[in-house]
Length: 370
Length: 95
Figure: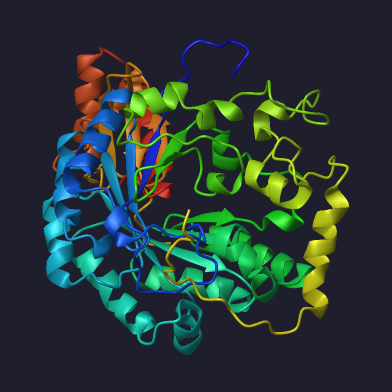
């Protein structure tokens, strides 16, 4: 809770994981290891109610994600509903499962923007990373269909050891595909990314070279493409303000309706998540125990509690603090002020002797019985 | 680079698809919505942007603003150009 208490400011964004089904198997997927099964997914009327409530509460951006959201047959119906509710709709897609007709249908339904993932600028490598033969070629067509339909395109490239030497090439590929914006995002190690960390983490030297290359391209392509650069966390000096601050800007809804303050929040034990089947979005935003657990600054321990940056980075990422220190209230050890900062340095240095570890591809598994 | 980031008198600026000017009832303010971006639009920006319909020329927009607000035309032109070129660099306006 914030010191000022009272009602928290309205959320800006809602990320809807419409489904966890996905034809790709990217080893850095941000979905949890225990994926929601098809049978558990919210149905169309419940999703519509979620978006209506979100819009009424003040949400501006609706991010339609997954899994692969195109696996939902009601995708265009959901987009049309969001448009009617006044929401800005962003489709976050792998492109697999989209046809030219479906993209036209989405454009007609009012879709505002599409974000397409590209695994690498090198086709065989891209297909190997995705665990799906032909994915790269298909995505080239999808990008063309998106721009032909008049929709603005963002290319999203997640950077890791297998493609880091081609970070700049991926910016160039995005320009060639007609994207207005490209996200060059170094892998974040949660969920599947954490499981595959040994195979994904680049060396410090590779990371530094790639960052410099992409930063330089911001000048080269000024006015042509906007480059959003998410730099690797483990090599940073201060932590990122994860989610712009816990429960401050947005919320995630899982395929089965659980409302999370961030996509990895379920890794934190003892947090109580409310479900949209039982609570309204407004009730969740204001009263859900999980959202209030780390809202504001009152929950902080030292060195965060007395830190002048506490309302800049909010102590960094709770899930990473938990993963690396065992306590979600600790400072994110990415911060050089954390007494446990050397743990991160050790993990970041691991890569040198990690060898070529194989990927554990993201796959659907049924949950462990309760 | 593409020659599109410069405003001249015959430019017909417009908000491309994926960029929306919206009055937000919850917050009681005008916002410019774009992919992963929300920018607050002040009263002057709103007046400029709502005229960027892809048909009106930059010169006509400036004339209109100067007339409606009885303002110095050169001053209006400078302000409007600065705003539109800044947004064009972010790919939020097409000139």
